[in-house]
Image 1 (cartoon, one colour):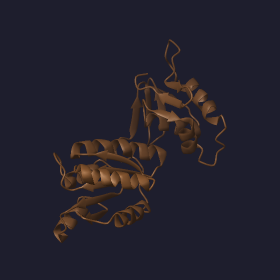
Image 2 (cartoon, helix red, strand yellow):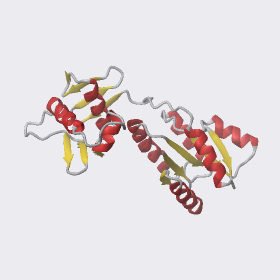
Image 3 (cartoon, rainbow, N blue to C red):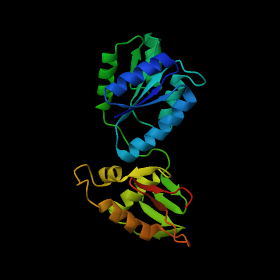
Amino acid sequence: MNILIIEDDPRVADFLERGLRAEGYGVTVARDGPTGIERAHELWQEWRSTGANGAVLLDVMLPIINGSDVCQTLRASGISAPILMLTALGSVSDRISGLRMGADDYLVKPFSFEELLARIEALMRRPIDLRPLGAKKLLVGVLELDRDSMRVTVEGSEISLTAKELALLELFMSAPGRVLSRERILANIWGTGEDPLTNVVDVYVRRLRAKIDRSPDGRSCITTVRGIGYRLEKGQ
């Protein structure tokens, strides 16, 4: 489970980060509104592609862009991850304003860490719609994937892929340029119950390469990162 903390006070941010990491959460910290929006988009794509759980802890009094506007921006862009707003503004009107901007919950400072954990756990139990609300098509180099029809074209020509090959390609195209470990690919496409020693990932990557590679010099769109996994190149 992953938490994005958008908090400009370094003492509060450090306290939250250390406490949440000690509880086993993965943590990312942003110190202002624009950076928080950027990190939220990056993490949302990762959470969508991996099926991971995630939430946002959002301070209201942020520099450059305040927390309410950050919340509204995230919701408008289709990010449906749980948002817990943190603020010293505790009036009823302040709480209502935050909730109307799209927040799921509101916690007034100072608060106990145990209550924060309980609020996060409650938010994580809620179902999240991970379907893409933004772009319906993925474009990476000569590859195009239409998520509505699940049709794939390479240099404008449609190709036929099996269901597993489609799922594998979508995973790669959701994170172009990023190295995906064999273990991560296996868990996302075949499930955590699959034998970790199987070579099914390598077999399907070879099949996918045979169908999508078009480079005249024999280079593949999918690069092997020895000892780790694979990466879909952005410019191929």
